Image (cartoon, rainbow over all chains, first blue to last red; front, side):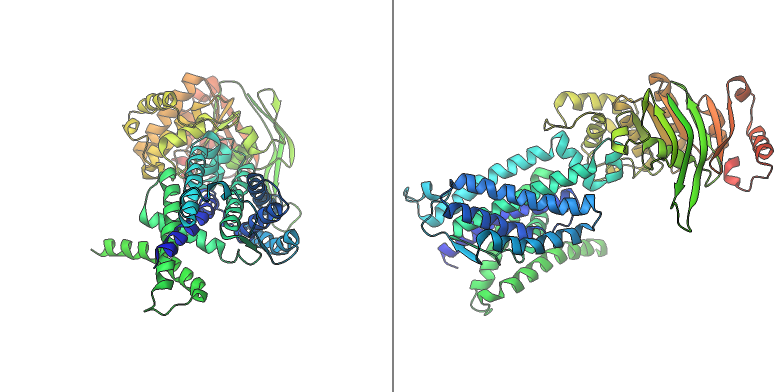
Amino acid sequence: MTEIAFWGAVELGLVYAFVALGVYLAFRVLDFPDLTVDGSMPLGAAVSAVLLVNGVNPWLATGAAMVAGAIAGVVTATLNVRFKILHLLASILTMTALFSINLRVMGRPNVALLMQDTVLTPFYGQGLADYYVRPAFLFVLVVIAVALVAWFLRSEFGLAMRATGANARMARAQGVRTDLQIFAGIALSNALVGLAGALFAQTNGFADVTSGVGTIVVGLAAVIVGETLLPSRLVTVALIGSVIGSVVYRIAVQLALSADVIGLKASDLNLVTAALVAIALILPRLRKKGRASS
Amino acid sequence: MIRVSNLGIVFNQGTPLEKHALNGIDLTVEPGEFVALIGSNGAGKSTLLGAIAGDTLATEGTIVIGDRNVTRWPAARRAGIVARVFQDPLAGSCGSLTIEENLALAAARGTKRGLAGALPRSRRAYFRDRIATLGLGLENRLEDRMGLLSGGQRQAVSLVMATLAKSDVLLLDEHTAALDPHMAAFVLDLTCKFQAELSLTTLMVTHSMRQALDAGTRTVMLHEGKVVLDVKGEERKGLGVDDLVDMFRKVRGQDLEDDALLL
């Protein structure tokens, strides 16, 4: 693996770290298997790309992508909480609808961002190679996001959200409005995923309607790899673990694809993804079994 | 104070499975009163508690707590004035959260939850003091997950949780039934102590006639969704378990088939 390929993998891992944080909020904190992310990631990319092409300030465009993601989350939460549709199905419905919406937003299957200013433009050409600038910039954003989410989950409101996912009946008995918590949590989760989409578009120079396929698996892979590498009950550690998991996962994929001996091609990406997630899920179980029999 | 008037609850209304769980209950619990609620399986004890807490909405009748008509309030809103301890030790607390996080959740019952930290240092110290009064040594384990505690320890912590925030009413749903006899006695003693200290208006469901006569200031018996016996004061003091069984027979005109009630 070349150095550029390595930093490219780190960069992609850091973009998907925001997905991992979102997936952690939905799957782990709220115990809400939310597949909306497969739609809200390209939604974030589409919204930010279209706004950038139309000359909107890059930070504003990125913020708009987060809002769009949050709205997608609210739709899923409404279908689930208000109309009692099973959470998994509710999120699949939103995800399916978003494919069409993303096409509408962009007006075509993909939008190129070649000459547009992005949030990264001011940092290019300051003496550091572009392939260092992008991961460095993303790293700073990820640190800020982890700090904010950790602070949120340790607040009174965030604690109520964790209780909602862990024991909804108890949460209600303590006066927690669990339906409101699901709305807030799924909206926040998808806002983070929308942010990932916006950053993906701006670091890669395009938004594509099909780029969302498998986002949920990648996000889940990051969370699970993180839990395997950094097992802890503390939310802050779990959040950091998700970020590390996301980066480690990308490097592992890059290694697998660039090892000529195995003979894998770029088109085998999804197969490698699924295999890595399966391994990450099986490993802790094997370890437990080994301990029990010894 | 709790005033339940003509309360009716029907499950699966309009279907072949229709069940009248409560049939026009009238019950007024005065401020500071400690009512032990007894009755055989399916008598409607837990349904009545659930109706007061807001888990099930009344089909007919009204529920007033303090001076507020809460008949149409959802459970989360009633939580501001109603504290509860459940029968299942796992139901009343979050096993995946730490003891102090559970306490923080309970302490914020009835308040608006904002973005301020849930566990500031002053609060931690207060929780430590409150948990220390249990005498179970749990004050040194506040950062342990709740799931690591035994059922009895969890119920004891649940009782503390129920008394952290102010409430008009304390509802106990057979909260000692799942515990071993030693722990059950400990938790019941604790209940009586807290109830007396805070003079909480309390409604306790129990399966044991002994407990229904020993604990609290008033004994109410339900049968088939109706109040069939209501004793307090001098009349109650002279009662033994045998008398209670006799009264039950007289009221209902039938024998008790449920041995569990005699314990």
